[in-house]
Length: 219
Length: 219
DNA sequence: CGAACTACCTACAGCCGTGTCAGTAGCCAA
DNA sequence: TTGGCTACTGACACGGCTGTAGGTAGTTCG
Image (tube, rainbow over all chains, first blue to last red; front, side, top):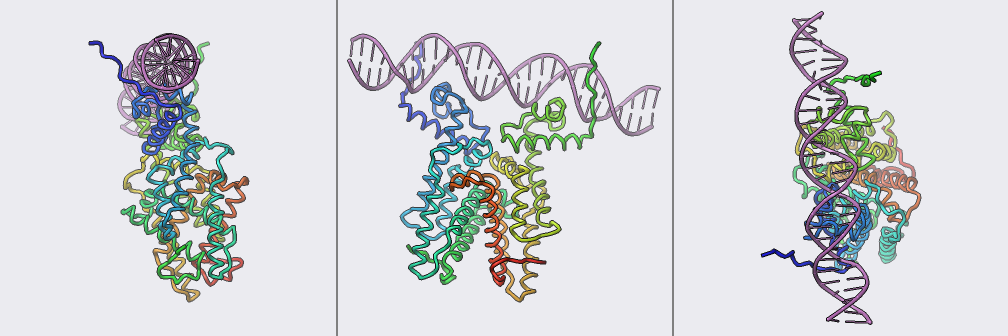
């Protein structure tokens, strides 16, 4: 009647690292930085915590890997949001970005990354916001030429991207705090209206010719 | 030769709480959330850590008090930045807000507050962003009337405030991450240019009559 | 001056989280 | 089948941090 130990599942090292990072990210996203504990993560995955140490050597190692993967994942998601089949209105894109940032905890992860200064110095990750800016610039220039308007200055695009990035990050992170501070009980609705407004602001800035009332940026 | 214990300073309870909170805030601002340790704070102040527990009962208690005071302090500073003797250009105000948020670690503190959901529910703190919005709305309306322009809609002001708040928070928190992502090595300069640009954007939005080139909002 | 109050202290207890060690068990190749 | 590699495990050591207990010393008020 000697109860034998439970069956042991063996992953490839890469699989294991991946699963562990995902679990860690979940913990971080919902519980805040202090909730990233080896034992908890291990329990979530049904493994023993030394296994994590086996793959990441040390807790710090896990955290660094986490920070590194966070930026990559964020990039992917943002690109997804932007190059979606139906680009739709600017506001819709903002909504998607916001969701990516908020729901999946990327904003928190990124904020935590910034707070604990664990950001990879100048690592191999491509300067993605720049790529994004380039793409946007090209598209806006093409649009403008098609309508015989002057093309937007590059700085204009750079700063707009930065504005949107900062604002969406800020809003995803502390939207409810802002809501409370400005006395809005209904969080979501107000935030959504805010994004619509921001979308309009950007569009009128870049396509001043638009007939104002209902924006229509078809591609 | 019995070395007698070091002289003991006795504060009022309020003083003590204040000093402790300040030290805790410092720790939090520069070391991230995990750096808020009773023993460290105590060492910083030259007191014994049970003293902290004497005043805040428990570590959680300290953290809650910290979160509560954070919002208050932020409000004060922002109000300071806005009602400064020389209001100056919008960009200058943005600079001041940004400094307040960044240097003094308020952004981090606020972010942490949001992340660990320790935000006081609907506490007595006045809905300060709302007050701020009101003041701004009044002023813009007055300006507009003086120049016989239509006054801005209230929503317009509300959303602008939110935009600035979110953007400055986001930028203060992760400005360098954003810099890196967009491939800008020189952090500060670019960020400053960004704030100037944002200032212009807001001013042209609210005072479209302005002669474009160099804005002049005298009061 | 004496008593009460309480801010503050030293010493200690208990817990919890990381990291180590020596062994176990899947998987693949010879 | 066998041997080797390594993902994985249980048990434990260690340190650090929070929280407790009981005593000490400033302050204030009668």
